[in-house]
Each structure stands twice: as C-alpha cells, then as structure tokens.
Length: 151
Image (cartoon, rainbow, N blue to C red; front, side):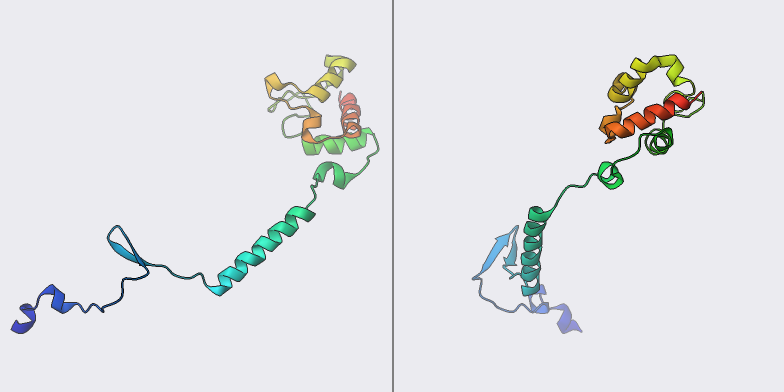
C-alpha cells in the first residue's frame, strides 16, 4: 500500500503510444478524422435523389378551391361557406364577436357597400377580403346571397 502511494500520476495511467499522423489538435485535444459510415452515405444519396424527384414532380394544391370544384350559387351554399370561413369572427345575430353581428347587414350597408366589404375587406378593422381567403367569385356570391337572408 505504501508503494502505491509513492507512484506518480503518470505511473497510474497507462497511455498507449500512437502515431500523431492524421490527428488534429483542437483546444489541446487530439481529434481523429472518422469516416462516414456506409449506411449514412447511402441514406444521404437516397434523400438527395428523393428531393430532386419531389422538386420536379410536385404540384401545388389549393384545398379550398380545387377540392370543392364549381359550386351552385345559392344561399344554402353561402351558409356552408360562411360557417367555414366567417363564423369564427361574425355571429348571424346582432351579437358582436371579433367582428360585428351580421343580422340585417344588407339593410345597414346596402348592395354596393356589401359587395365592397366582401371583395376588399376592412383592413383597418382587421377584416380580410374574401378573395384573400381563397374564395372564388362564385363562393363570394353565395356568401352574399346568404348574408341578404339574415334579418
């Protein structure tokens, strides 16, 4: 036991001699240059091929207008579009949500102003224009017909 206490730290740890070729010292630490495993190389090549294929063959999809197709311009269709696009901010009663309640909106605004609001929104009050919500002209006409029925 006395003999172990007299050992120097260098004696306690065993360091294998090695050739310093191929090592780089970074912050006093010798770093070796490891090779990239073959399976990672294969993965990178497959991903790169997929990315090129996807970039060439991908097409854009507009879920609201392409998936629905042409609609019949009716108040019933307008009600469905209203519920999907407008009901989050507007009630069909006089109750105010984020935006004003829309009961009697046609009598309040009139034909020209209602069309203006539907097509241009009210950006100063935070209301987007319906075309910016990806609604087609037929869908906007259907919403207008539905709004006219609200008394």
